[in-house]
Length: 345
Image 1 (cartoon, rainbow, N blue to C red):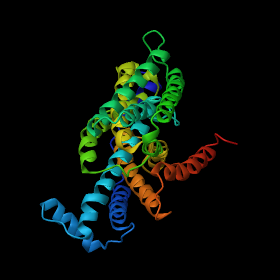
Image 2: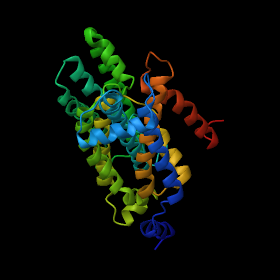
Image 3: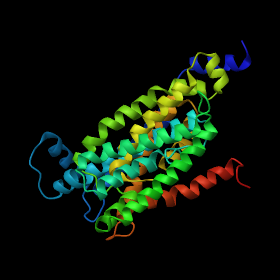
Image 4: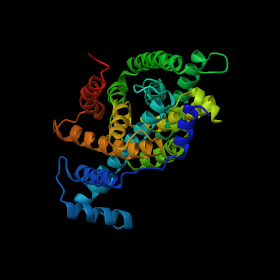
């Protein structure tokens, strides 16, 4: 057995290290971010009132005063932020693992642009809201199919060609979406706000629609963590250990497309969450994908909830699209990470 194969066997048998202290702190931080996001806004609501609204909402009792704001406006928006942040972060981590490329994420693969195009078509044509996630999924899968067709070399999909194809397909999808916006002038403001990334469209109905897609796509990616550990050793070693590399790559792309379409369908394009969060988690928890992916989901959800809180409160009474905040926060930090790694001189 070669050294690489022995290393691969070690990756398969390595125990999971959750770092319980750090995980507990992260969980506490996410809970605090949720309470802050629900309590702060144009009307400040105290913690006892917030907790009372939670209790009345869960038990189905009649709501009054600030309880209506908590249960019917802010809490579903926060829940949608948690779901979208978790989806984007898990997909980003999985793409970085399957392509062994630290810059890979749903946007680089063109998946998010395809999903946004599908959702834009639904908005411009004024289709029922329940159709929007389906249209986003169709757009995402169409982007994936085009990227795979362009990247195919025999029976294989070389990672570099696949990413390059994803960039090209994503650019085309974005251009088509812009064209549709210009021809839907009466809905231009809504569609433009959607493309910048915005959680303001979220309600309990949207959360109920997004949840099963997010659980199915994100859950499948988390279950593939062990296989991604082996794939991180290289295609040759992974194949020597019996891993069907091409089928795994295709499965990850399809699962990530499903989760990305769910995230984009009601929140629009929110950049950098899926790119930066796995990098932060990797630094604190390590590169084991069995831990990296679920922790990224938790951290990404909390990060997006805090970003949305900033978007709602920084420029009151006007409200920024949350995609603007994540780009302003994530862009410079990602450049900092790249510089630390010596990739930019």
